[in-house]
Amino acid sequence: MTHAPPLRIDIETPSRRYPVLIGEGALEEVRAALDRAGLGPSRFVVSSPTVWGHWGAALQEALPETAPILVPDGERHKTLPTAARVYDALVKGGADRSAAIVTFGGGVIGDLGGFAAATFLRGLPLAHVPTTLLAQVDAAIGGKVGVNLPGGKNLVGAFHQPSVVVADPRVLATLPRREFRAGLYEVLKYGVACEAALFDQVGRDLGPLTRRESSALTPVIAACCRIKGAVVAADERESGARRVLNFGHTVGHALEAATRYRRFLHGEAVAYGMLAACRLASARGAMPPADSASVSGVIAQFGPLPPLNDLSAAALLEYVQRDKKVSLGRLHFVLPTGIGGARIVDDVEEPELLRALREIGLNE
Image 1 (cartoon, rainbow, N blue to C red):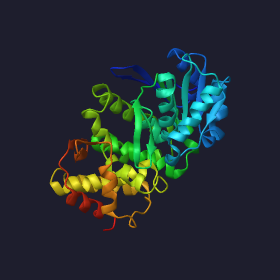
Image 2: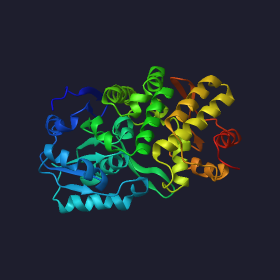
Image 3: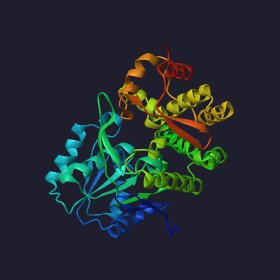
Image 4: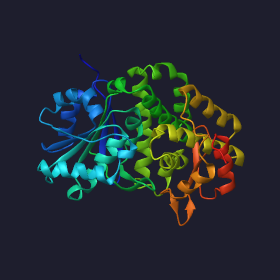
């Protein structure tokens, strides 16, 4: 079957310029994309058994010489011991500094495989072939890689930009419904924090998006990549403007850590984090209540979120304070100013955050 050429969005950062290729059939272009990016012939694919079972044969049509390194998926497996399994496989496979790592999976696989690429032999070239909506719109772009510790999410990591990203909406067809919804929450993050037109587009095209029609997905994925690319170009290492992309993530990461990465998918936790941030911003008068209600309404349209009424707001604060966005004892918190804009504050007080957490459903 003949497909239209993939869309190309160029990401320009101080450390690297690289293309993101987006479109139905892009998976068939992986070999050519890696060749154009200058990745050597020794390519090690890091994937999960689930993704490989669905799409491994398709990837091997493009990279027939590749034997995958398969590791378990899910945030609770994004750890240093799992990274060590990747290192061991690279050693056994004879990887040297001419080798490259290709991640083939969702955000966890991208983070984990990217972390291995950043650290093995002090750094190997990296390519991402993301297979979840969340990874295609966010995790594969921008160079953040890392692993979790028991005390918090992504506390060990690096900035390691890929050489190329290849995103094919076709692979989203096998995603469980819940996983797909989790990616939509991340799309919504960009709309609320950065671009009102994207927020409106998601609401307008919710039907074709949830039916996973490539004609609706491709422009939305491209819009998110374009927005993130512009932010990363201005602030590659998250010293300022890039922190806006953490909208919803402070509370979201705390929820994931507090439940040992077993209850919430990342996007679901971010959805609760966005709700809390909107409540907090509205209470401060920083966000019009109507905009906060619009965000809540769209999130509700996506479908149900896992319950959190058995969790303590006070206990969650302990995890919030361990967040890597705490600097000099002050928490940097992203608050929306309306649909399409946000700002970073460092004066959020415990009582107002507790109130917002209780308003979204946590108990005392």
